[in-house]
Amino acid sequence: MAIHPPPHPLTPPTLAQRLAWPAAVALAPLLLRQGRQVRRLFPKMPPAPGPSDGSLKGPDPIHVLGVGDSTVVGVGVNDAALGLIPQFSQALHEHCGRGVSWRSVGESGATSKDILAQFLAEAPGASASVVFVSLGANDAKDLKPLRATISRFERLTDALHAAHPEATMLFSSLPAFNQFPTLPQPLRGLLYAHAQAIERSLRPLIEARPFALMSPPPSKYSDGFFAPDGFHPSITGYRDWARFALTDALQRGALAHLARR
Image 1: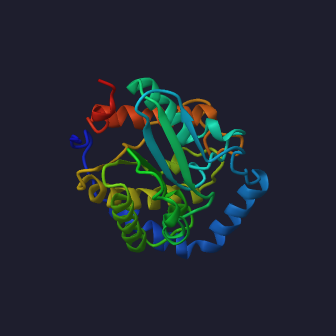
Image 2: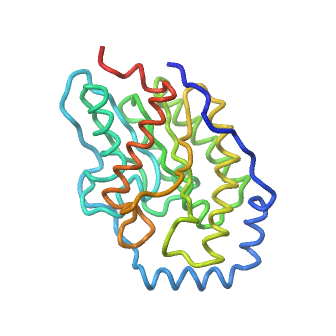
């Protein structure tokens, strides 16, 4: 397996992005009020009902493990089979011509600290061919300190690799909070800046590992991407995200070895 270097530059966080966290701490009373207002207007959506695992028929099955937060447990859709990991598995099934089994491990609202503490023990299971990690949105949203967040991601990456040494690991970029329609300013701008500080610090650490890559940030979310809460993806959003992640991995040669020969 050979993963080509990312087609985009590994740009470090800007000073403004690094200062987003202390700025948010200073503005905490205002941001908390804005956050409560958003929650009143757009009530919390539950995880999608349905099983946390499944399979698609075909020869020589590929095993996909999803690890992460609300996006891994399908918040935003009304059927778990329409969430991120099942839709990624469907796209992989179509491309490779092989069977695919998938399993999702995580929880809505989970941060990297939560996954390490509560869910990592569930992640081993059957040996995975692909580990898809969608995490970091809550580290940014909850304004977790940058250095501690990066350290936890490193530990998580190494632990997952130890449990699944043959797997290709795909990490999603963090949310582009500046495109979230329900977030007011300055909350929107500060969350986006802090998310970018995390992502730009994390990306070179992930890309330095020969078994892992991080998807590029989206240029613009598609029409219909968001669920009614304006925060989580819809069925269309998860489908577009899954295919975006798969296309990037294929273009970089990360999953070429999985194609049926």
